[in-house]
Image (tube, rainbow, N blue to C red; front, side, top):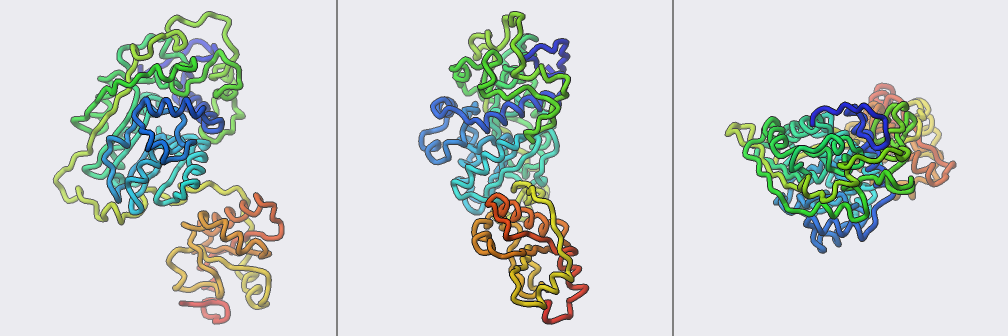
Length: 478
Protein backbone atom coordinates (compact mmCIF):
# COMPACT_ATOMS: atom_id res chain seq x y z
CA UNK A 1 0.00 0.00 0.00
CA UNK A 2 3.00 2.28 -0.22
CA UNK A 3 2.76 2.99 -3.94
CA UNK A 4 -0.13 4.30 -5.99
CA UNK A 5 0.13 4.18 -9.76
CA UNK A 6 -2.98 5.67 -11.28
CA UNK A 7 -3.55 4.92 -14.96
CA UNK A 8 -6.91 6.63 -15.19
CA UNK A 9 -7.95 10.24 -14.88
CA UNK A 10 -11.54 9.22 -14.15
CA UNK A 11 -13.31 11.26 -11.50
CA UNK A 12 -12.96 9.98 -7.95
CA UNK A 13 -9.49 8.44 -8.33
CA UNK A 14 -6.82 8.96 -5.68
CA UNK A 15 -4.13 11.34 -7.03
CA UNK A 16 -0.93 9.68 -8.19
CA UNK A 17 1.42 11.88 -6.14
CA UNK A 18 1.68 12.34 -2.39
CA UNK A 19 1.33 16.09 -2.84
CA UNK A 20 -1.89 15.52 -4.75
CA UNK A 21 -3.23 13.25 -2.02
CA UNK A 22 -2.53 15.86 0.65
CA UNK A 23 -4.11 18.59 -1.48
CA UNK A 24 -7.27 16.57 -2.15
CA UNK A 25 -7.72 15.72 1.53
CA UNK A 26 -7.06 19.29 2.57
CA UNK A 27 -9.59 20.71 0.15
CA UNK A 28 -12.45 18.52 1.33
CA UNK A 29 -11.75 19.10 5.01
CA UNK A 30 -11.46 22.84 4.36
CA UNK A 31 -14.90 22.73 2.82
CA UNK A 32 -16.18 20.91 5.88
CA UNK A 33 -14.77 23.70 8.07
CA UNK A 34 -16.61 26.31 5.99
CA UNK A 35 -19.89 24.44 5.60
CA UNK A 36 -20.04 22.89 9.06
CA UNK A 37 -21.79 19.64 9.90
CA UNK A 38 -25.33 18.68 10.70
CA UNK A 39 -25.43 18.92 14.51
CA UNK A 40 -27.45 15.73 14.87
CA UNK A 41 -25.03 13.75 12.69
CA UNK A 42 -21.98 15.21 14.45
CA UNK A 43 -23.43 14.46 17.86
CA UNK A 44 -24.29 10.90 16.84
CA UNK A 45 -20.75 10.23 15.62
CA UNK A 46 -19.15 11.82 18.69
CA UNK A 47 -21.23 9.77 21.10
CA UNK A 48 -20.66 6.60 19.08
CA UNK A 49 -16.91 6.98 19.57
CA UNK A 50 -16.91 7.68 23.29
CA UNK A 51 -17.61 11.36 23.96
CA UNK A 52 -19.97 11.89 26.87
CA UNK A 53 -22.91 14.30 26.84
CA UNK A 54 -21.12 16.31 29.54
CA UNK A 55 -18.01 16.67 27.40
CA UNK A 56 -19.99 17.75 24.35
CA UNK A 57 -21.94 20.30 26.37
CA UNK A 58 -18.70 21.83 27.68
CA UNK A 59 -17.33 22.81 24.26
CA UNK A 60 -18.61 24.91 21.33
CA UNK A 61 -20.98 22.86 19.20
CA UNK A 62 -19.04 23.89 16.07
CA UNK A 63 -15.87 22.27 17.41
CA UNK A 64 -16.97 18.74 16.60
CA UNK A 65 -17.90 17.96 13.02
CA UNK A 66 -18.50 14.22 13.09
CA UNK A 67 -14.89 13.46 12.08
CA UNK A 68 -13.75 11.42 15.08
CA UNK A 69 -13.10 7.69 15.40
CA UNK A 70 -12.39 7.77 19.15
CA UNK A 71 -11.90 9.94 22.22
CA UNK A 72 -8.15 10.18 22.90
CA UNK A 73 -8.50 12.65 25.77
CA UNK A 74 -10.46 10.06 27.78
CA UNK A 75 -7.45 7.73 27.82
CA UNK A 76 -4.64 10.30 27.99
CA UNK A 77 -4.64 10.98 31.77
CA UNK A 78 -3.85 14.64 31.13
CA UNK A 79 -2.70 16.52 34.22
CA UNK A 80 -2.56 20.12 35.38
CA UNK A 81 0.39 22.03 33.94
CA UNK A 82 1.10 19.63 31.08
CA UNK A 83 1.69 20.52 27.44
CA UNK A 84 -0.61 18.68 25.02
CA UNK A 85 -0.30 18.58 21.24
CA UNK A 86 -3.17 17.51 18.95
CA UNK A 87 -2.29 16.48 15.38
CA UNK A 88 -5.08 17.34 12.96
CA UNK A 89 -7.06 19.34 15.50
CA UNK A 90 -9.97 20.24 13.21
CA UNK A 91 -12.57 22.40 14.91
CA UNK A 92 -10.80 21.97 18.26
CA UNK A 93 -12.85 19.33 20.11
CA UNK A 94 -9.93 17.48 21.71
CA UNK A 95 -7.92 20.63 22.40
CA UNK A 96 -10.81 22.20 24.31
CA UNK A 97 -11.24 19.06 26.41
CA UNK A 98 -7.49 18.88 27.01
CA UNK A 99 -7.33 22.58 27.93
CA UNK A 100 -9.76 21.97 30.79
CA UNK A 101 -7.39 19.29 32.11
CA UNK A 102 -4.07 21.13 31.77
CA UNK A 103 -5.53 24.16 33.53
CA UNK A 104 -4.20 27.72 33.32
CA UNK A 105 -0.58 26.66 33.86
CA UNK A 106 -0.54 24.16 30.98
CA UNK A 107 -0.70 24.49 27.24
CA UNK A 108 -2.88 22.86 24.57
CA UNK A 109 -1.72 23.22 20.96
CA UNK A 110 -3.64 22.09 17.89
CA UNK A 111 -2.03 21.65 14.47
CA UNK A 112 -3.98 21.32 11.23
CA UNK A 113 -3.08 21.63 7.57
CA UNK A 114 -6.27 23.48 6.69
CA UNK A 115 -6.31 27.24 7.10
CA UNK A 116 -10.10 27.07 7.26
CA UNK A 117 -10.04 24.52 10.08
CA UNK A 118 -7.57 26.68 12.01
CA UNK A 119 -9.79 29.73 11.52
CA UNK A 120 -12.80 27.75 12.76
CA UNK A 121 -10.91 26.48 15.81
CA UNK A 122 -9.70 29.99 16.66
CA UNK A 123 -13.26 31.31 16.49
CA UNK A 124 -14.37 28.51 18.77
CA UNK A 125 -11.54 29.32 21.19
CA UNK A 126 -12.56 32.97 21.23
CA UNK A 127 -16.09 31.95 22.23
CA UNK A 128 -14.64 30.19 25.26
CA UNK A 129 -12.24 33.03 26.07
CA UNK A 130 -9.20 30.82 25.40
CA UNK A 131 -6.05 32.51 24.09
CA UNK A 132 -2.42 31.71 23.28
CA UNK A 133 -0.16 30.54 24.73
CA UNK A 134 -2.60 28.57 26.92
CA UNK A 135 -4.58 27.41 23.88
CA UNK A 136 -3.10 27.81 20.41
CA UNK A 137 -4.11 26.64 16.95
CA UNK A 138 -1.45 26.61 14.25
CA UNK A 139 -1.64 25.83 10.56
CA UNK A 140 1.04 23.27 9.71
CA UNK A 141 1.45 20.42 7.22
CA UNK A 142 1.78 17.21 9.22
CA UNK A 143 4.01 15.67 6.56
CA UNK A 144 6.81 18.15 7.33
CA UNK A 145 8.79 18.96 10.51
CA UNK A 146 6.38 20.21 13.15
CA UNK A 147 6.72 23.81 14.42
CA UNK A 148 7.29 22.46 17.93
CA UNK A 149 10.48 22.49 20.00
CA UNK A 150 12.08 19.13 20.77
CA UNK A 151 11.32 17.51 24.10
CA UNK A 152 8.62 19.99 25.14
CA UNK A 153 5.38 17.99 24.92
CA UNK A 154 3.96 15.73 27.62
CA UNK A 155 1.17 14.17 25.57
CA UNK A 156 0.48 13.92 21.83
CA UNK A 157 -3.06 13.23 20.64
CA UNK A 158 -4.54 12.51 17.23
CA UNK A 159 -8.04 11.51 16.21
CA UNK A 160 -8.71 9.83 12.85
CA UNK A 161 -6.04 11.82 11.00
CA UNK A 162 -2.88 9.78 10.45
CA UNK A 163 -4.68 7.41 8.06
CA UNK A 164 -5.23 10.39 5.74
CA UNK A 165 -1.50 10.95 5.20
CA UNK A 166 0.54 9.26 2.47
CA UNK A 167 2.58 6.35 3.84
CA UNK A 168 5.85 8.28 3.89
CA UNK A 169 4.01 11.12 5.61
CA UNK A 170 2.72 8.74 8.27
CA UNK A 171 6.27 7.54 8.99
CA UNK A 172 7.67 11.08 9.08
CA UNK A 173 4.94 12.30 11.43
CA UNK A 174 5.46 9.49 13.93
CA UNK A 175 9.18 10.29 14.05
CA UNK A 176 8.29 13.92 14.69
CA UNK A 177 6.02 12.79 17.53
CA UNK A 178 9.01 11.05 19.10
CA UNK A 179 11.14 14.18 18.68
CA UNK A 180 8.74 16.63 20.35
CA UNK A 181 7.86 14.38 23.33
CA UNK A 182 9.67 14.71 26.63
CA UNK A 183 11.28 11.52 27.95
CA UNK A 184 8.42 9.69 29.61
CA UNK A 185 5.91 11.52 27.44
CA UNK A 186 3.06 9.60 25.90
CA UNK A 187 1.07 9.44 22.71
CA UNK A 188 -2.61 8.48 22.36
CA UNK A 189 -3.77 7.99 18.79
CA UNK A 190 -7.26 7.07 17.67
CA UNK A 191 -7.06 5.91 14.08
CA UNK A 192 -8.50 3.60 11.45
CA UNK A 193 -6.63 0.35 10.81
CA UNK A 194 -7.28 -1.98 7.84
CA UNK A 195 -8.36 -5.48 8.87
CA UNK A 196 -7.02 -7.03 5.66
CA UNK A 197 -5.46 -6.17 2.33
CA UNK A 198 -7.72 -3.77 0.50
CA UNK A 199 -8.49 -4.37 -3.17
CA UNK A 200 -6.95 -1.94 -5.64
CA UNK A 201 -10.35 -0.58 -6.61
CA UNK A 202 -10.92 0.47 -3.00
CA UNK A 203 -7.38 1.77 -2.44
CA UNK A 204 -7.68 4.03 -5.49
CA UNK A 205 -11.17 5.32 -4.68
CA UNK A 206 -10.83 8.95 -3.63
CA UNK A 207 -14.08 9.08 -1.66
CA UNK A 208 -13.05 6.15 0.53
CA UNK A 209 -9.54 7.59 0.96
CA UNK A 210 -10.88 10.94 2.17
CA UNK A 211 -13.35 8.93 4.24
CA UNK A 212 -10.43 7.45 6.25
CA UNK A 213 -10.81 3.92 4.87
CA UNK A 214 -8.52 3.23 1.92
CA UNK A 215 -5.50 5.04 3.36
CA UNK A 216 -5.54 2.86 6.47
CA UNK A 217 -2.55 0.65 7.20
CA UNK A 218 -2.86 -2.94 8.28
CA UNK A 219 -2.01 -3.63 11.91
CA UNK A 220 1.48 -5.05 11.26
CA UNK A 221 2.33 -2.10 9.02
CA UNK A 222 1.21 0.39 11.65
CA UNK A 223 3.18 -1.38 14.39
CA UNK A 224 6.29 -1.32 12.20
CA UNK A 225 6.02 2.47 11.73
CA UNK A 226 5.51 3.03 15.47
CA UNK A 227 8.56 0.90 16.27
CA UNK A 228 10.69 2.57 13.60
CA UNK A 229 9.79 5.97 15.07
CA UNK A 230 11.39 4.93 18.38
CA UNK A 231 8.47 3.61 20.42
CA UNK A 232 8.57 0.15 21.97
CA UNK A 233 5.77 -1.88 23.57
CA UNK A 234 3.04 0.19 21.95
CA UNK A 235 -0.46 -0.94 22.86
CA UNK A 236 -3.00 -1.34 20.02
CA UNK A 237 -6.61 -1.74 21.15
CA UNK A 238 -9.53 -2.43 18.83
CA UNK A 239 -12.22 -0.16 20.30
CA UNK A 240 -15.00 -2.11 18.54
CA UNK A 241 -16.41 1.15 17.24
CA UNK A 242 -19.01 0.80 14.51
CA UNK A 243 -17.56 2.44 11.39
CA UNK A 244 -20.89 2.09 9.62
CA UNK A 245 -21.94 5.14 11.61
CA UNK A 246 -20.16 7.20 8.94
CA UNK A 247 -22.29 5.81 6.13
CA UNK A 248 -25.65 6.71 7.64
CA UNK A 249 -26.09 9.43 5.00
CA UNK A 250 -24.76 7.35 2.11
CA UNK A 251 -21.18 8.62 2.38
CA UNK A 252 -18.12 6.40 1.94
CA UNK A 253 -16.60 7.10 5.34
CA UNK A 254 -15.72 9.92 7.69
CA UNK A 255 -16.08 13.24 5.79
CA UNK A 256 -16.01 11.36 2.49
CA UNK A 257 -17.52 13.30 -0.40
CA UNK A 258 -20.37 11.61 -2.20
CA UNK A 259 -19.08 11.80 -5.76
CA UNK A 260 -22.45 10.92 -7.21
CA UNK A 261 -24.15 13.89 -5.58
CA UNK A 262 -24.37 17.45 -6.79
CA UNK A 263 -21.72 20.03 -6.05
CA UNK A 264 -23.87 21.50 -3.30
CA UNK A 265 -22.61 18.92 -0.82
CA UNK A 266 -19.53 19.06 1.40
CA UNK A 267 -17.16 18.44 -1.48
CA UNK A 268 -15.75 21.63 -3.04
CA UNK A 269 -15.15 22.20 -6.76
CA UNK A 270 -12.44 20.12 -8.37
CA UNK A 271 -8.87 21.12 -7.59
CA UNK A 272 -7.31 23.42 -10.15
CA UNK A 273 -4.19 25.49 -10.43
CA UNK A 274 -6.17 28.52 -9.26
CA UNK A 275 -7.25 26.96 -5.97
CA UNK A 276 -6.60 29.53 -3.24
CA UNK A 277 -8.03 27.96 -0.10
CA UNK A 278 -4.65 28.47 1.55
CA UNK A 279 -4.39 25.05 3.11
CA UNK A 280 -2.09 23.34 0.68
CA UNK A 281 -0.59 23.53 -2.81
CA UNK A 282 -3.17 23.22 -5.56
CA UNK A 283 -3.20 20.14 -7.71
CA UNK A 284 -1.96 20.58 -11.28
CA UNK A 285 -4.59 22.06 -13.54
CA UNK A 286 -4.31 19.15 -15.94
CA UNK A 287 -5.67 16.87 -13.23
CA UNK A 288 -8.60 19.05 -12.29
CA UNK A 289 -11.11 16.47 -13.48
CA UNK A 290 -9.71 13.87 -11.07
CA UNK A 291 -10.88 15.79 -8.03
CA UNK A 292 -13.52 14.54 -5.64
CA UNK A 293 -16.30 16.34 -7.44
CA UNK A 294 -15.27 15.57 -10.99
CA UNK A 295 -18.07 14.85 -13.47
CA UNK A 296 -19.75 11.57 -12.77
CA UNK A 297 -18.33 8.69 -14.73
CA UNK A 298 -20.49 6.90 -17.26
CA UNK A 299 -18.55 3.72 -16.54
CA UNK A 300 -20.09 1.53 -13.80
CA UNK A 301 -18.21 1.81 -10.50
CA UNK A 302 -16.09 -1.22 -9.51
CA UNK A 303 -17.89 -3.57 -7.14
CA UNK A 304 -15.43 -2.87 -4.33
CA UNK A 305 -15.52 0.93 -4.27
CA UNK A 306 -16.55 2.50 -0.98
CA UNK A 307 -20.04 3.22 -2.32
CA UNK A 308 -20.65 -0.51 -2.77
CA UNK A 309 -18.38 -1.96 -0.09
CA UNK A 310 -21.22 -2.87 2.25
CA UNK A 311 -20.20 -3.42 5.88
CA UNK A 312 -17.23 -1.09 6.50
CA UNK A 313 -16.36 -3.02 9.67
CA UNK A 314 -15.35 -6.01 7.56
CA UNK A 315 -12.55 -3.97 6.02
CA UNK A 316 -11.39 -1.63 8.76
CA UNK A 317 -11.56 -0.99 12.50
CA UNK A 318 -11.13 1.92 14.88
CA UNK A 319 -8.08 1.46 17.09
CA UNK A 320 -6.64 3.34 20.02
CA UNK A 321 -2.84 3.29 20.11
CA UNK A 322 -0.94 4.09 23.28
CA UNK A 323 2.85 4.44 23.50
CA UNK A 324 5.45 6.17 25.66
CA UNK A 325 8.83 7.72 24.95
CA UNK A 326 11.18 5.72 27.11
CA UNK A 327 13.25 7.19 29.91
CA UNK A 328 16.92 6.64 29.23
CA UNK A 329 18.11 6.99 32.80
CA UNK A 330 20.29 9.95 31.85
CA UNK A 331 20.29 13.54 32.98
CA UNK A 332 18.31 14.55 29.88
CA UNK A 333 15.27 12.65 31.13
CA UNK A 334 14.23 15.53 33.35
CA UNK A 335 13.47 18.78 31.53
CA UNK A 336 15.40 21.79 32.81
CA UNK A 337 12.11 23.61 33.37
CA UNK A 338 9.01 22.06 34.97
CA UNK A 339 6.14 21.63 32.55
CA UNK A 340 3.97 24.07 34.50
CA UNK A 341 6.45 26.95 34.08
CA UNK A 342 8.09 26.06 30.76
CA UNK A 343 7.85 28.51 27.85
CA UNK A 344 5.56 27.74 24.95
CA UNK A 345 6.39 24.58 23.04
CA UNK A 346 5.83 26.49 19.81
CA UNK A 347 9.02 27.38 17.97
CA UNK A 348 7.50 30.77 17.18
CA UNK A 349 4.79 32.43 19.25
CA UNK A 350 3.45 34.26 16.21
CA UNK A 351 2.36 30.97 14.59
CA UNK A 352 -0.59 30.94 16.95
CA UNK A 353 -2.02 34.10 15.37
CA UNK A 354 -3.44 34.99 11.94
CA UNK A 355 -1.08 36.40 9.32
CA UNK A 356 -1.81 40.11 8.81
CA UNK A 357 -2.85 41.39 5.39
CA UNK A 358 -2.17 45.12 5.40
CA UNK A 359 0.98 46.40 3.67
CA UNK A 360 3.63 48.10 5.76
CA UNK A 361 3.75 51.90 5.96
CA UNK A 362 6.94 53.39 7.45
CA UNK A 363 7.69 56.58 9.30
CA UNK A 364 11.27 57.67 9.96
CA UNK A 365 12.78 58.31 13.38
CA UNK A 366 13.22 61.95 12.34
CA UNK A 367 9.53 62.32 11.58
CA UNK A 368 8.59 60.69 14.91
CA UNK A 369 10.96 63.11 16.67
CA UNK A 370 9.25 65.99 14.88
CA UNK A 371 5.89 64.79 16.18
CA UNK A 372 7.23 64.81 19.73
CA UNK A 373 8.79 68.26 19.34
CA UNK A 374 5.63 69.74 17.91
CA UNK A 375 3.61 68.44 20.86
CA UNK A 376 -0.14 68.17 21.05
CA UNK A 377 -0.37 66.32 17.76
CA UNK A 378 -2.96 63.66 17.08
CA UNK A 379 -0.60 60.68 17.32
CA UNK A 380 0.42 57.81 19.61
CA UNK A 381 3.65 55.80 19.81
CA UNK A 382 3.43 52.13 20.82
CA UNK A 383 6.37 50.05 22.08
CA UNK A 384 5.55 46.40 21.36
CA UNK A 385 8.67 44.93 22.95
CA UNK A 386 8.08 42.67 25.90
CA UNK A 387 10.76 43.36 28.52
CA UNK A 388 12.96 46.15 27.16
CA UNK A 389 10.96 49.30 27.91
CA UNK A 390 13.09 50.23 30.91
CA UNK A 391 16.30 50.13 28.84
CA UNK A 392 15.23 53.14 26.82
CA UNK A 393 12.13 54.07 24.90
CA UNK A 394 10.56 56.84 22.88
CA UNK A 395 9.37 59.41 25.36
CA UNK A 396 5.67 59.06 26.10
CA UNK A 397 5.36 55.75 24.29
CA UNK A 398 2.89 53.21 25.58
CA UNK A 399 4.16 49.67 26.10
CA UNK A 400 1.91 46.94 24.69
CA UNK A 401 3.81 43.65 24.22
CA UNK A 402 3.25 42.02 20.84
CA UNK A 403 2.48 38.66 22.43
CA UNK A 404 -0.76 40.06 23.84
CA UNK A 405 -1.48 42.82 21.33
CA UNK A 406 -3.69 40.77 19.02
CA UNK A 407 -5.85 39.61 21.91
CA UNK A 408 -6.23 43.21 23.07
CA UNK A 409 -7.17 44.65 19.66
CA UNK A 410 -10.79 45.51 20.55
CA UNK A 411 -9.83 47.55 23.60
CA UNK A 412 -6.82 49.04 21.79
CA UNK A 413 -9.08 50.14 18.95
CA UNK A 414 -11.56 51.68 21.35
CA UNK A 415 -8.76 53.77 22.83
CA UNK A 416 -6.97 54.82 19.64
CA UNK A 417 -9.59 54.68 16.87
CA UNK A 418 -9.69 58.48 16.62
CA UNK A 419 -5.89 58.92 16.70
CA UNK A 420 -4.67 60.00 13.27
CA UNK A 421 -1.24 58.30 13.38
CA UNK A 422 -0.47 55.25 15.55
CA UNK A 423 3.27 54.51 15.38
CA UNK A 424 4.58 51.06 16.31
CA UNK A 425 8.16 50.06 17.04
CA UNK A 426 10.10 47.10 18.40
CA UNK A 427 13.82 46.44 18.69
CA UNK A 428 14.69 46.92 15.03
CA UNK A 429 11.19 47.02 13.49
CA UNK A 430 11.81 43.89 11.50
CA UNK A 431 9.27 41.66 13.22
CA UNK A 432 6.91 42.51 16.07
CA UNK A 433 6.51 46.18 15.18
CA UNK A 434 5.43 45.63 11.57
CA UNK A 435 3.23 42.69 12.54
CA UNK A 436 1.34 44.62 15.22
CA UNK A 437 0.98 47.61 12.91
CA UNK A 438 -0.46 45.36 10.20
CA UNK A 439 -2.84 43.70 12.65
CA UNK A 440 -4.09 47.11 13.74
CA UNK A 441 -4.41 48.35 10.16
CA UNK A 442 -6.39 45.22 9.30
CA UNK A 443 -8.69 45.99 12.23
CA UNK A 444 -9.08 49.59 11.04
CA UNK A 445 -9.90 48.41 7.54
CA UNK A 446 -12.42 45.86 8.80
CA UNK A 447 -14.21 48.65 10.66
CA UNK A 448 -14.05 51.07 7.72
CA UNK A 449 -11.95 53.52 9.72
CA UNK A 450 -10.00 55.79 7.37
CA UNK A 451 -9.28 58.47 9.95
CA UNK A 452 -6.57 56.47 11.72
CA UNK A 453 -3.50 54.82 10.24
CA UNK A 454 -0.90 52.35 11.55
CA UNK A 455 2.77 53.20 10.92
CA UNK A 456 6.09 51.47 11.61
CA UNK A 457 9.07 53.44 12.93
CA UNK A 458 11.98 52.40 10.71
CA UNK A 459 15.00 50.96 12.51
CA UNK A 460 13.09 50.51 15.77
CA UNK A 461 14.52 51.49 19.14
CA UNK A 462 18.07 50.70 17.98
CA UNK A 463 17.96 53.45 15.36
CA UNK A 464 16.16 55.77 17.78
CA UNK A 465 18.74 55.40 20.55
CA UNK A 466 21.61 55.91 18.10
CA UNK A 467 20.11 59.24 17.08
CA UNK A 468 18.34 60.45 20.22
CA UNK A 469 19.52 58.27 23.10
CA UNK A 470 20.99 61.27 24.95
CA UNK A 471 18.22 63.70 24.10
CA UNK A 472 16.17 63.87 27.27
CA UNK A 473 13.06 65.36 25.73
CA UNK A 474 12.93 62.51 23.21
CA UNK A 475 14.11 59.45 25.18
CA UNK A 476 13.05 58.12 28.56
CA UNK A 477 14.57 55.40 30.72
CA UNK A 478 12.51 53.95 33.55
